[in-house]
Image (cartoon, rainbow, N blue to C red):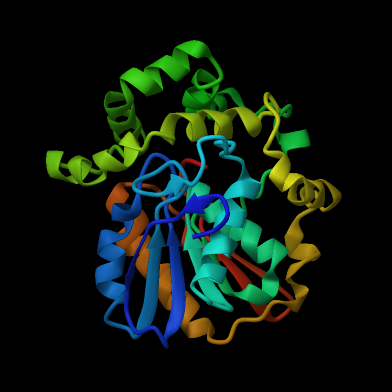
Length: 288
């Protein structure tokens, strides 16, 4: 628990083993890792899978707190959870929103990160530039739902038709994933969180510079602005990996039993390095 949130999480494994945080994205929840956990729990790891803010049982401690979905908030939630569990450093793995949270922690607190596995690559947002820089039309169409969420109609759709909307996103993003009614029902309750809509809408408006962020994270946003160049060349030079074999193993499991089980396309060959030290292992999925 931190000053803003009561963060709910699933945990399994030896408390004295290497901790691994598995961070989910939108619109998914901890069950995205159900196959991954079954593999990792056999390998003497402490596995922690949190519900992000706005998802599942994770809740704000006060009705007046800003329901922010910005990247700084997601990263701060993760570091607060690590502090609350008295975890000094861990392997951070995730995709989409969760991958971004892991990237933020690794950039701001490299000494807390044994290794980083981001299934969407290195995805900290440079909002000042990214929010106004157009992409190719064939890529822009993939982000229709983000633009939709900028409108009152999109807000109403997510409020009143969220299950149908989420199922449609699952189907269009993962055309080879034949999820069952039971698969969806496992996660469905997570999307009924009373803060889900507000957090999601704020996230997709903030990243385009359409709304202000939470003042609580102004220092973090200033850091992002001052370090808008790729953090790989600035912050990671003091980070080190204690066991690269463990990182590679978890990376493969995440891809083979995580992303591919969701039908997401991946590139196993994208590995970012700084000098001879492998500092971040990243993978690209079809949706960022």
